[in-house]
Image 1: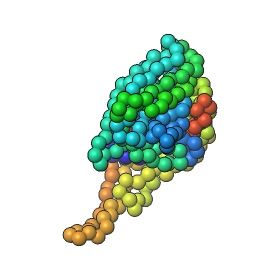
Image 2 (image 1 turned 120 degrees about the horizontal axis):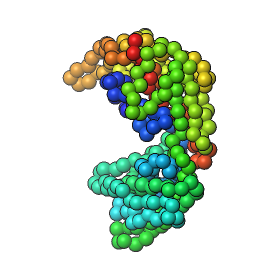
Image 3 (image 1 turned 120 degrees about the vertical axis):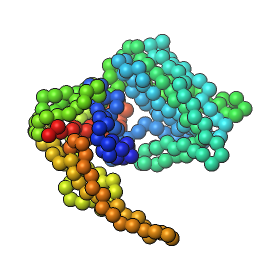
Amino acid sequence: MKQIKKIAAAFLALIIAFGYFNAFAIESQAASKTTTYVLDTKKGVCYPTKVRAGIRELSNSCSIYLVNEGDYVASVKSNSSNLLTKITGKAVYTGNEYTYVRLEGDKEQKCRSRSTITYHAKKKGTYTLTVTIKNAKKKTTCKKNIRVYAEEYATPVKTLKYAGKLYNSIGTNLFTKKSGKLQVVMNKGFKLQKIEVGKYAEKAYKEHNPEPVYVKVKNKTNISLAESTKYKANSYSSPGEYYSYESEVNYDYLYPVTYVKVTYKDMKLGIVRSIEYELYYKN
């Protein structure tokens, strides 16, 4: 997530939007239970025990990670005709190559393959996906069940509004008002935990790609957007065999950027995560 945010900040012409159409939001993990992925150490399978599906969203998906070389996802079945599902992608890593899955407590597990499971719910309800795992000899090693909670939307934030203007993924999201009310409305099944507003400080940072400084704010209160497009950062390199350097980097973006981080709890999955938005001020 940090790398995505740094690229977005570096170019600023790229508008990453989220709101009622929030498929392109930057999602980050908060300091709590953040995932339903578990590892079956005996069978070498990493999978989510619970997921969400939005009946208005066609691109709901999750991944199955396999630790043992040669294992593969043979099939996925739904327990209802109201939940369509399909294996839509497979990636196999050989030799010294691996992929990683992040488990609870920021633990990373090295895996030899990853399969993408896509599903679409036609009606609201609770369903079950059954994933069958086989080994290189095509023998079934195990089956894993994934609980699917289907509601109108699987995304947490219904709307985000600043200064009376909706934030959405199909607009330019340039705001002409320097200050205004910030209002967040959550979709059903998601509970708002906190809202933080982040800006780059005017002082020079002692790192090449600094993070914004965040301040917690209340919902439905006025905030002010960042006004400066400029800040400085120091770039360092450790002394090497042939060269070393220390330099100052000056940034001057096209528009000032203000970050809004919304932390929420998914009441069905029991996890806490954060969504980050970028507000640009047309000064």
